[in-house]
Amino acid sequence: MRWPERPQATVTQALTACTAGMQDHTEKRRLEGLLAQMQTAEAGYLRCVGGADLHALHTSPDLLKGQQRKDKEALVRAYDQGLVGRKDGRALYDSIMAAAPHGECPLCGTGEVDTLDHYLPKTAFPLCAIMPINLVPACMHCNHGKGAALADSPDTQPLHPYVDQLGDERWLVADVLPTAPASVRFRVQAQAGWPPSLAARVRHHFDSTT
Image 1 (cartoon, rainbow, N blue to C red):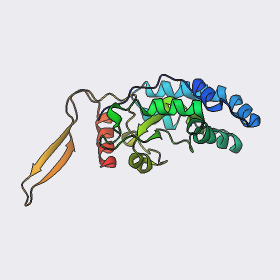
Image 2 (cartoon, rainbow, N blue to C red; image 1 turned 90 degrees about the horizontal axis):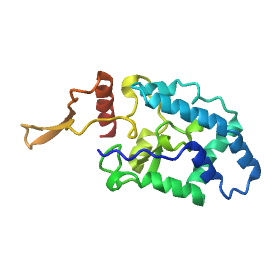
Image 3 (cartoon, rainbow, N blue to C red; image 1 turned 60 degrees about the vertical axis):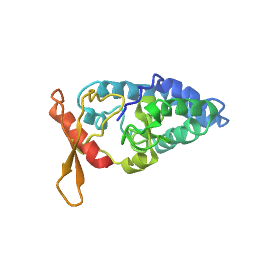
C-alpha cells in the first residue's frame, strides 16, 4: 500500500473553487456564511489527526451535526455539484485524486483510483464535505464498501492515508498452507514500533478490505 501525498489546499480554498461561477447567489451566500464553521471544523480535524487517537474525530463537537437541514444539504451539494461538477472545483478534485502513487487505491493497494472517498462521511459530517484532508483517493469498490459507516471503537477506526505512518518494513505476511491444492493465508505482522491500537486498526483495515 502506497499512501498519497497529503493535500495542501485548505477548506477555504476548496470553498472558493466550489463556488467559482456559481449562478445561485442565495446558495453561494449560504455557503460563504458557513465558512467560519468549516474553518473551525478543519482546525478540530487537524488537532485530532495529529494525535494517536483518530477515533476522537467522531466525538469532536466541531465536526458534529449542528447545522440546520438546509445548511447540511447545501454543504453536500457543494461537493456533488461544486467540487465534482464545476470547473475550478473539479480541478481541485482531480489534483487530490492524482496524488495516489501509480493511480493505485491506497485503501486496498490493488484497485485503480477513480473517485474520492470521504474519510468522515459527508452525510454525517457535512462541514467536512469539501475539506481536502478528509478526501482520500480510492477505487469505487473501497468507496462503496466503506460507505457511511462510523467506527464504534478506537480499534475499528479506519486508517487515514494522510496521517497514519506504517513504516517501510513488511507488515503483511503470506503463509503457504500444506493443503491439496496448496493455499495461501495472509496475516498482519505488527511492527515493533507500532502501538497496540495501530496494530489493531491495521488488522481491522486488512480484514475489511479483503
